[in-house]
Amino acid sequence: MCGIVGYIGARQAAPILLAGLEKLEYRGYDSAGICVVAPEESKLSYAKCLGKIINLRTRTRDGTALPGGNGIGHTRWATHGTPSETNSHPHLSGDGRIALVHNGIIENYQELAARLRDAGYVFRSETDSETIVHLLEDYYDGNPVAALRRAAAELRGSFALGVLFADFPGRLYALRKASPLIIGMGEGENFIASDVPALLTHTRKIIRMQEGSVAELASDGIKLWDADGCAITPNPETIDWDANSAQKDGHAHYTIKEIHEQPYALRRTISPRLRGDEIDFGFTKISEQELRDCNCIYLLGCGSAYHVGMVGKYYLEKLCRVFAIPVLASEFRYAHPVVTEKTLTIVVSQSGETADAREAMHEAQRLGSKVISIVNVKGSAIAVESDEVIYTHAGPEIGVATTKAYNVQLNALLLFALYMARVRGTAEEIYIKEEIHALQTLPEKMESFLFDVTTAQFYASVYCGGKDIYFLGRNVDYALALEGSLKLKEISYIHSEAYAAGELKHGTLALMEEGTPVVAVCTYTPLLDKMISNIVQVKARGAKVLAIVREGETGLDFVADYVWRIPASFGFTQSALTILPMQLFAYYVALQLDREIDQPRNLAKSVTVE
Image (cartoon, rainbow, N blue to C red; front, side, top):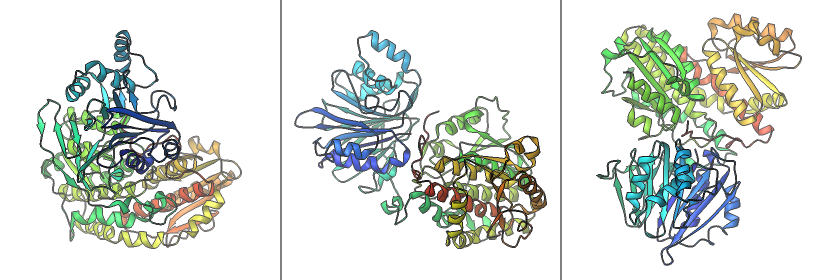
């Protein structure tokens, strides 16, 4: 959840580390630190502080106070111990000769710490991470790789490590288990980082570290070993987007930039899979016969990815006539799920590293299910470990509250549902072709809606004073309302809940009073009359209703206080358009309230711990 950077080369490391950490600010953090080793001194120098990286820049005079060409940096998101300088990284060994930064959680740190304390090691912080550096010191006998491998064998949990040994000033070490870490390959210099944006100003050639692997970086080369100690031949890949893709491009925030990028991202998601009216995912490990035999699909995800599964349930059950069960990934493996060889599991994760989703996927596989993942990041853990992967090709998403990643996941799942329906023969061919044609015209409709944001700004100004805002919807609109509500609470900090409109009479009406803000999502035409009745019910209790409706619908004009019309589209492709006003509404409400939109409090972009 935090960010790691590392550099070794001829340039001064500290300024590069600081700039790299700034590129990872979107991941969420509460403190930051860097450590550098100067080859001529073989001495570790470090600085860390609470709060933003600008504070660390001030403390280190933009890095000039820590000379040396080999270093590591870290942004911390507190898990063990409160946000403080003492708990921030890097952590140093008792003799000051080893420095470490860590992303992840060590599950058995208490028993290890007790053993190390008995051996005389003094702990200065409240963190699980400090246990690792003392364990390394205990095992270090002059061979850094051996110490790293011995420590890794004892650690339970998830860890990505960047490590410096003062005895080896010309080497930077890295270790990865269940937490993302990549290596950047430069000319006469090399890097490590938690994510690609930290490296793009220096290189687009990267190596994704394998599970359990150890790396030794020098300025002129890289050595890799697997979990068994066998040498690995590096397998570099070239990132197909550049540094400009991770910039704001004149927008006030990444979030609004990424909302406007959705039409382009959607084209990248659907185009590689369509050949006219034919859908081709290139699956090799899941056969068409297995799709025909499938009798249950689990949809696993966390947060917005779970909401994708909620929408996907409607896609799959209607089109494919198969039980589709969305389950929170954090709950799945503890719920004794019923899984057989005829079960299919679909895992949704933007980063492909989400810890809960990955562990849930492993449980499904252990029980005999085949797994398809829908992810954005090539070579990520979930992508590599699933049977088949559908890459969304959305490009980088920097805003913590997902927008474009959510939308392309929706449409990747819809495209899969159409493909599966064709394989199973459960939907008429003419209907499938209509959905495909509608998918192909979606980007233009999205662009036309996003062109003018003044309506969104107006409704945000009307509703930004609300203490509680409720979202209502039926069928797929309810599933979309869940995401609209989450977006609002994530970035505006206004309490918001989404309810199935048919449940109003079963408790929710008790919350309605004079002036209560309600957003009614009314784009599912078969249930429009029932939604009108629900709006009348909340209006009778004093609610102030904003209705989101398709162009051409007139039934809401004399019922709701405000009617926000969006382009109409065929069938389930409407979902991609319905979510847009809710994203814009959340953004402009948060803007009115002067919130930290791209980096909401207490949240991290990539959740790599359970």
